[in-house]
Length: 265
Image (cartoon, rainbow, N blue to C red; front, side, top):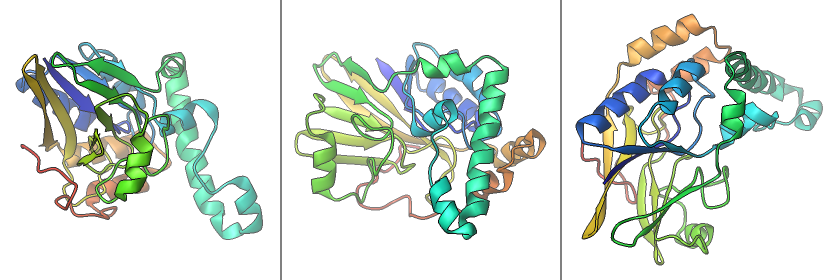
């Protein structure tokens, strides 16, 4: 079997199409999509339409999907703004971004579909390996998650008791492949909104048969100019912030460092 694992698509159908094409060329037979599907991007509905058509797709809800559904928001809170008016522009920008996405998703009848997403997915590989897919870490869709530089003790505690041999996640946008105790902790990186100096989409292919398994980390180029043109037409209130990822303005880490895998492509 070949299972494609992706996360943090963020309404970027352009990047998602490139990843799906690459996966198809590699023989991927089914997909897991581990959350953050629509928010902070210009094409939430076309993105969902493509995700829903993926073969054998299983899905997990991410924290930004929860924000779209429930009205929960990342900071700053209204109470924080009340005591510090300098936070008002950020508060307004966050609210406008998630409200725009919710409006688009609701207008096309996708809210119920998002509400039905699971918080985790599991499978047993032919060689007996137990694989768990979550958004951030077992039992959580937010927080520090899995990253190359999270201290071993913290990461070991985060995956403790997960009843899995391999934990796959997204959320941090940082491709990671580490062993903590008996658990292999893997981050798929992100399809969109990169924060490393490799701006390509990242994902993982899980190869498995009865003799064993391996995880292949992949990077896929896509047309950033095409995405920016779509963003300019979309009328998204957070367009400049979203564009900053495509320009490389949000780079915070080198792609190649301890704990981060070397991609196969």
